[in-house]
Image (tube, rainbow over all chains, first blue to last red):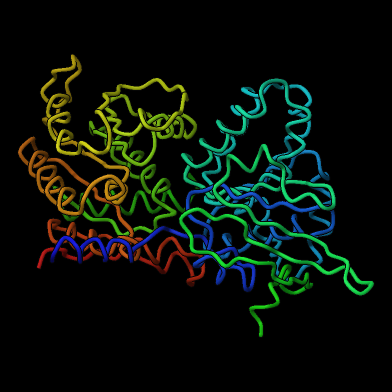
Length: 237
Length: 220
């Protein structure tokens, strides 16, 4: 085989990808998130960030992958799971086994950046997840003792070296696109947003950045359904 | 490691012993499960069987595997790490291990030489390979990020030859046949045995107990 043909074959072999399980999204990003990578999911309150994360972890669990959900200071795990259980795609058998969680809220009150990093790595080494969620990452900056940017650099670098694809959520104010300090350190950015049109608030999703991926651009309508969670509507028609 | 991992690890060891597998063995594993299967192999070969081994880090710094071994209480006193990626990783994670560094993943032609130095004790701590041993690369496909296909192919031939001449070594080569098809086929042609993990790791299949290690004769 010639060198050129070899290179072509190698390129076809391509990156390993993890399907998100979000109907319509995987088609926009060449089949899923690159593995390993860190992807920022940014949006204001009520845009479906946590629902997105849960679907992502459940999709992995369905494929025999391990998931780890770090909650920070958004809502206690107890309440998150209670509301999440209303979705049909949630298989309760996954939780506590194939999807594990760790509440970082209390640790963030007491630990410095390095201690928090160590605590998170201990959990990752124990669980060995392919999929990790940190929901939300943005509150960490306000509470952490130490350099937030350095913490993000070290954290994201290590998450990839642990061989996982991590979804971090970023809370933004209405009209704001993404938290700038997080955006520099991630491999992908997905925006979920609300827009008022003809007296109704509609939801949209946009892939702003996805390294190593020829992704679709532009805002796509989304819906949140009880059966599937977030659905990219354009893909249905 | 969970009960399922332990069972699979014992299945592999059983297959090694029952069938007397030595030399290069190709493992077809989903790319997302390399870490888990590496850990299973290290637990089996290093702790359970007490074999000395070499672990070559190409994909990520060796500190991560050291951390995993420690977290999962896997003893690996006779394990030596050769790290070809740390110097490019901007990672300051600390780990306590016997480790040698090579310049980087671009210089894979130097890897067999670095291994030989360790095997012959040039670094003050030689590996006693009298009763066999093993060598694992984490992972072979990652070499293609930094080297041409032909270089990796040549390296693979030298690598297997070096280990073959060093004694009765087990050389598990882990790859995802779906993601690295060409390299997989090339490596497969150099191996005596193929072990496919694809089906075993999936929970979508029926009862796990019904699945078996699919062991094929690789050459020919």
